[in-house]
Length: 111
Length: 111
DNA sequence: AAATAATACCTAGTCTATCTATGTATAATA
DNA sequence: TATTATACATAGATAGACTAGGTATTATTT
Image (cartoon, rainbow over all chains, first blue to last red):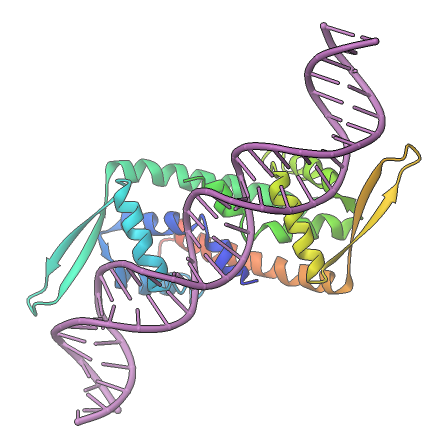
C-alpha cells in the first residue's frame, strides 16, 4: 500500500519550491536537507527528486545553473523564479485547504 | 498539475475507512457525505470511488453487502471489518506523522 | 406525457508521479 | 585498496485518480 509514497504525491513540488525558495540548492543537498528538517521523515529517492526538479524547471518554476567547485566537482544549483515564488504562495494555500478538509473528516468535531 | 488530485493519493483510503468506520454506507452516499463534511472540498469521482472500495474490500478492510429497498432499488452497503478498524487507527497515525513532517518544512519555525 | 436530472452501480483505458535499478564519476574514508 | 559518500541522470515498472463511457431506476420539470 505504501501510504507514505502516496501521501507524498502532490506535496513534493511544494516541498522542493519551499526549500529552493529560501536559498539556491542542489539536488543532493535537497535530499539531505529535507531529511534533516523533517527529522528523518522525508527520505527522497534520487529517482523521485531529479525528475521532479527537471519537471519544475521545464515549467519555469525553478532554474538550474551548473557551478564548478575549486575541486573541479560539478553541482547544479537550482534557483526559484518569480513564477516559482507565485506558485509557492499558491501551493502553500492549497496545502492549507487540503489540511483543513482532511481534518474535517479525519478528526470530526462533535456537533 | 492538478495538485488536489495528487494530494488525494494516500488519503483516499483513510477518508473512506473513516466514514465507513462510523456507520455502514453505500458508494453514492459516501461521495455526497465526503463533500458535505469537507464543506465542498472533496468531490470524489465515481471512477475513483468504486475502484477504491473494491480495492479495500479485496484486502479485507471493508465488506460490501447488497441491500434491496422497499422500492426495489439496490444499494451496496459497505461495513468496516476488524482488520479495517486496526488499519484506520494506523492510517490516522500515519496522517499525523505526515502532517507534522510537512509543517516542519512548509511552515518552518525560526530557531 | 416526455424530457431531464438525480440516484446508484460499474469499468476500460489514459495519465502521471514515485520508485527500482542501473549507470557514470569524483572525493573521502576505512 | 576497497568501500562509502557525494553528485547527477534515466529507463522501465507500479499504482492510483481521472475521463469517458455504460446500465438501470426514480424523481422532477417542462
